[in-house]
Image 1 (cartoon, helix red, strand yellow):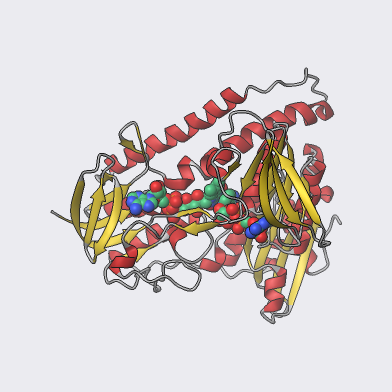
Image 2 (cartoon, helix red, strand yellow):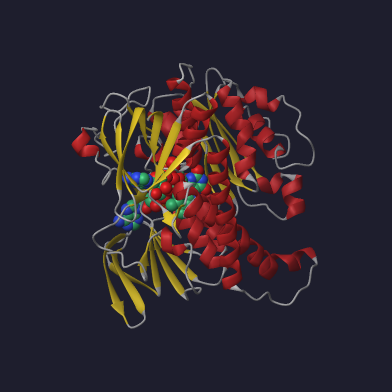
Length: 470
Ligand code: FAD
Ligand code: NAI
C-alpha cells in the first residue's frame, strides 16, 4: 500500500505531525528506531532522555533542596532530609514510561501505523525500515517527513566514555550523587542538570567558553542567573577553554585555559559535556537521496518545510531555529496542515525559551542587545521581584522582569523573566507580542493582587518610567 505520509522519527515533531495529519484524514505511518523489550519507544529525545526526565529530576531535587534549606524559614522544622536516589530515579523513569505509553495510545487512537526500526530515505516517496532483527522492508508514501531530531555535540578535548565523561543521556541517570561534578558548557543543559546534582549534594563547577552563561540572553539576565545559582552553591569558570581531560585515580581532571590565559584544572568524579546539540542527519540515507544541508549543517528547507528533494519535508531539531520541543510540535502541526492545503503560519521569532532552573529563566523575542544591534531605538522596563508583594510572601525575591519595546511605537519586541514561575508569566508577554501589542496594553490590563504577574505589569509601566512599587 502507499501511505499518504511516512514520518521518520517519533519525537515531538514527528508524532505531533502524525496526529494532526491523521486528524486531517491522511493515512500515516511513523518509523522509530528507539526500542526497548522489542517495542518502539515513542516520544523522541523529549520524552525519553530530554525535557521530561530532566524536569522530573528538577522537580524532585527542588523539593529536596526546599526541605533541607528553605522550610525552616517558613517555620517548618524537620529533621535533615535523607536522599533515596534510587526512588527518585524510579519516579523519574515511571513518569517517562507513562508518557511514552501515552504516545503509543495516541498513535493507536489516531490509526497511525508504527513501524519499529531505522528509517532510511531511498528517494521521493520511498523509505526503507531496518528492524532490530535485521529484517528490511520498504514502504511507499506520497510524502515523507524527516523528523530525526538531534544528538549531543562532542568535542575532541573531551572524548565521551559514557561513564565518567558523559552527555545528558547519562547525567539524567547517574547511579550515585557524584562528590564533584564538572559541567562543560554553561547553556541550558549545563545549568538544569548542574542544578539537579548540586541540589542533591554534588559540588558543581560549570566551565563555560564564553564570558557569560546562557549566551542567548542579555548580559544582565545571565548575570542575575549566575548570581542566584552561585548562592545555591554552583561555581562558574567563564571565558575558559577546555584543552583536554585525563583520569587520575577515581577522578577525571579537565584541563583548560582560564580567562586570564593561565592553565587551570577542574577535578570531578564525573564530567558532563553539554556544549550544544547537532541535527541527527547521518545514517538515514539523506546524502544518497540528495537532501541538502545548509551552512549550519541543518537540513535546508523552504517556507513549506520542503527539502531539496521533492515531496520530502523536514521539521524540528533537524532544521534551523531553536532546538525546542514546542518548536518541533508547532512545525509538525503546520506541516500537516500545509500538506492538507491549509495556510498555517508560525512566527519563528516568537518561540519562547525557558531554562528550568530555580528561579526559572524565560525569554521571548529580541534581547535588548539584538534589538540595538539591528539598529532599533528601544525603551526597556525592568521590575525586580523583591518589590513584588507575592514574591516577598513566598520568599522568592530573586530576579526581575524585563520588557523591551520599540522606542517610537511602544510595540513589545522582547521579554525576559528571571524569577518565580517565569515560564508561566512569560505567556502574557508572548501573547501580547503575537497580537502586535504594546507595553501600554500590558500596563493598562488589570492584574490580580497579590500575584507574581503584577511584576510583569510593573515592568510594562517601567518602560515609561512609571512603575508604582519601585
Ligand atoms: P527528537 O525528539 O530528537 O526525536 C527524534 C526521534 O527520531 C528520536 O526518537 C530518534 O530515535 C528517532 N530517529 C532518529 N533517526 C532515526 C532513523 N533513521 N529512523 C528512525 N528513527 C530515527 N526542549 C524543550 O522545549 N523544553 C525542555 O525542557 C527541554 N529539555 C531538554 C532536556 C535535555 C536533557 C535535552 C537533551 C533536550 C531538551 N529539550 C527541551 C530539547 C527537545 O528534547 C528537542 O528540541 C525535541 O525533542 C526535538 O524534537 P524532534 O521531534 O525534532 O526530535
Ligand atoms: P546550549 O547551546 O544551550 O549551551 C551550550 C553552551 O556550551 C554554550 O553556552 C556554549 O558557549 C558552551 N560551549 C560550547 N563549546 C564549549 C567548549 N568547548 N567549552 C566550554 N563551553 C562550551 O547547549 P546544551 O546546553 O547542550 O543544550 C542543547 C540544546 O538542548 C539547547 O540549546 C536547547 O535547544 C535544548 N534544551 C532545551 C532545554 C529547555 O528548553 N529547557 C533544556 C535542555 C536542552
